[in-house]
Image (cartoon, rainbow, N blue to C red; front, top):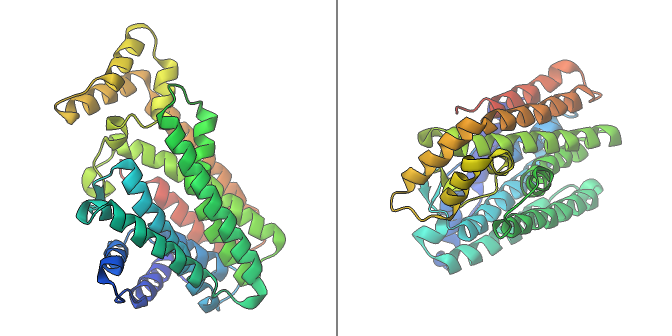
Length: 324
């Protein structure tokens, strides 16, 4: 069994082999720029780790793993346009450094490249993997549309939000794990357990991101703190704050959401103080831990010796203990 660090080193080396030096340079340079930012490389690592649970020969899973990572980064290019985000992983976003049209078109090429890489799956598992990947790609678009719809709604229920982040974030983690398991020759039961592990880990991971956007360290988070607050994003924190706030607290929160501030930091401070008063951070942490526990149960159910599962368990713990 390879360690997570060994897997990520392998992924990084393989990502660097991808050639984006084609013409026109205005199309491919933004792709090279995006992928050079690094990131956690979590999704391809999960693909290879899942495969490695069942075989030492993980080479057949490398190209599909890279495809999943390229696809993930494609979604970020388009998300950043829709969110008008200026910073990604501490660097200017593609639409900011170039322009919207470039980010759209370069993202489109990344999606095509992702499919080309996933299509290098061994023939025996190719249809299963491509069907899973295509379903996942569609679900991610559904999740993004829900996210957009929520911007125009005053009230979003917590369960609606959880379904949105399941689609937008968790299904790709689940796809990565199941892809690796399929290529590695896992049983039907284990491929489904790993898929559910990815769903539960993804939900916990996104709830952690909600927390970090308010309570994180900008230097380690890679994005400006308070971005969700500034754009009134319906996060798990805001949904519960709107539900719990009464009287003057509700009036104040409503004012914060509607008012324009010359100094963005003022709005972030006011909303954060109200979050603290309403203890919505604790509510979000409790839900995050609920999904983490479910993810651990999925790992426990795998028909694989415990020692082999430890690296995935360690990774899950690391993701949920990111500095806040």
